[in-house]
Amino acid sequence: MAIDPSAELADPEQQALYEQITAEVRCLVCQNQTIADSTAPLAADLRREIRRMIEAGQAEGEIKDFLVDRYGGFVLYKPRFQSWNILLWVAPLVLLLVGLFAVARFARNRAALPIDEDAG
Image 1 (spheres, rainbow, N blue to C red):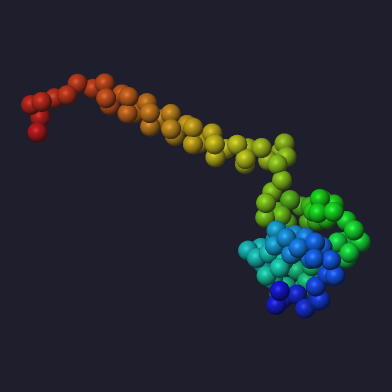
Image 2 (cartoon, one colour):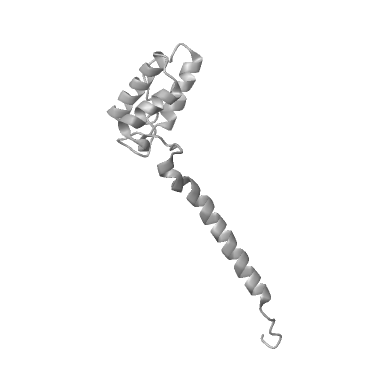
């Protein structure tokens, strides 16, 4: 990682976890970049904090909980499934089903129309 000047973690699993988490956390300054790609000072601080938490043995869930508690759900690129955001998860499926129903109904009604052989 060219932006992160610190040395890799000694444990390859911890390094993989570090890279995974930093690729899933949004830079709160840039908002269209992950903290792994951002040069903002806040992103560097978050990378250091994540590294410290991983070195302390905290699990991925604990780290993400800390980030969400501190910065809100917006900090994660992949929002968690919770009761308050169920509409965001279900709405695309509902809209797709409504669209399919409308197309099927339109096609069925169109097929039921009489054919006018004199037209044309």
